[in-house]
Amino acid sequence: MTGDSSRAFVPGHVTGFFSVHEADDPEQAGSRGAGLTLSEGVTVEVEPAAETSMQLNDEPAAVEAVTRVLSDLGVEARVTATTDLPVGAGFGVSGAAALGTALAANRSFECGRSENELVAIAHAAEVEAGTGLGDVVAQARGGVPVRLDPGAPEYGRMDGVPARTRVEYLTLGERSTSEVLAGNTDRLSEVGVDKLVRLVEEPTLPTLMAASREFAREADLLTPEIAGVLSEVEEAGGEAAMAMLGETVFALGNGLSRAGYDPETCETHPSGATLKMD
Amino acid sequence: MTGDSSRAFVPGHVTGFFSVHEADDPEQAGSRGAGLTLSEGVTVEVEPAAETSMQLNDEPAAVEAVTRVLSDLGVEARVTATTDLPVGAGFGVSGAAALGTALAANRSFECGRSENELVAIAHAAEVEAGTGLGDVVAQARGGVPVRLDPGAPEYGRMDGVPARTRVEYLTLGERSTSEVLAGNTDRLSEVGVDKLVRLVEEPTLPTLMAASREFAREADLLTPEIAGVLSEVEEAGGEAAMAMLGETVFALGNGLSRAGYDPETCETHPSGATLKMD
Image 1 (cartoon, chains in turn cyan, blue):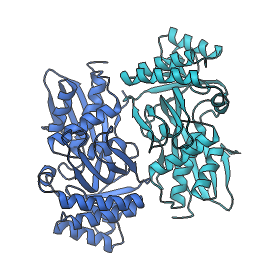
Image 2 (tube, one colour):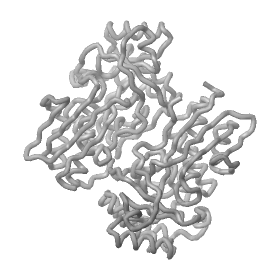
Image 3 (tube, one colour):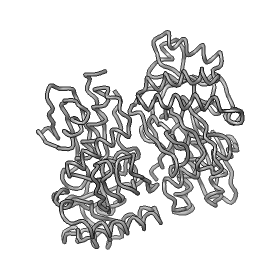
Image 4 (spheres, helix red, strand yellow):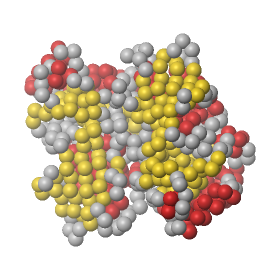
């Protein structure tokens, strides 16, 4: 099958709260926290090529995590990623592109890596590119992932909130993950660990959403625009939180539309990243 | 939502090879090995009831692992399981029923357990009932699960073969898992660990199938009927193996039909066990 193109689908992921854990080894670095994976995601096609190139939604794109994955696997390929998710708005598009590239390239080039190895390669690529710390392992698992310990599968530890729900989301603008992560994250991480302890005690969707709202406020990441939307959803009796890190609000059920907004709609993704059938 | 009925779907699982690992704590006991999860599986509905009862495909049934799960969660329910898979033929139907019951009961009764906790409850129930050692953790993961270390999520360690494929299967009769597991499993386990080492070195579907065929032969589990079918699939250029533990052959792609058999058809299941949307 070497030389054939392969495709993978990776769900989007919104993080509700997190803490940053640095380490020299990018497979051991990462974040703890929790969020939702989404039925909207990124479809990645990998075709062997003389020289690596990438397109995102029909435009030439440079996603550093993707080129790092290909280089780690020692292959050159044309990568075509398509998504209906907003880019740069907290949906883990770069992590999805990296993980989808790893899965599809492994098949096209018969690299013979295991799932954990491919997740580790994509996770390390995201960490080294500075574009994410926990999306890849969450996107590999699917559902409502809880990252108990940071890092790639060999080091990290995960659990999940056993729930499945309709999700609405609304993006107000872009925010750079790498800029926030490059700043002082001590306070943010302290709050994030507090919220994780709370969710582990009560692993339910309402607790996840409440902990996420508190995190955004206590970690000083809430913008006035996002705060306004959250209040209106709450007044309308819904559950919403801010996607980390993006100018994005996500809500359970019809929380945003009931508050008068015109959101995009999807649901939690049951499966996590998968190859597409040939 | 307490009091409402909830539904879960759990994929079937055929094991290709395994080793037995005993422990006093049922969450630490289990098996290592590998197999395929299947898009055919068990749908489980749980409704709160005055007294626990269970039906499997519209017949009253007593699946000990299911009653153990309900009792562990401290609830009484009417459990209705339906499946197109053969029962008692190596497809992990009892494990699927136990895990589906755990997921659905947790939602109906708002038990507030995490995914790992629910998998642990179902795994321990299967081990204590003597009906399985590794199906539940495999069914929770989906795909082509590799059980690197035995036990529930807190103790076990898993990986996966990154592949997705059409699967055919043919059942020739029934075989009791508990009878085999009650015998001396030392030799079987020695062979099973050898095969796991081989698959970890080369985590691909062809290696999984070859290691599984060798396991069945070297562990003396092959019946003449199954051996006959495997030879014919091989002669027709296909890849098949025996499901542990059942009088069942499973094959990749169209391996069985190409050899002239009239098998059931499904594919590997990308997701693992999931709640159904409300």
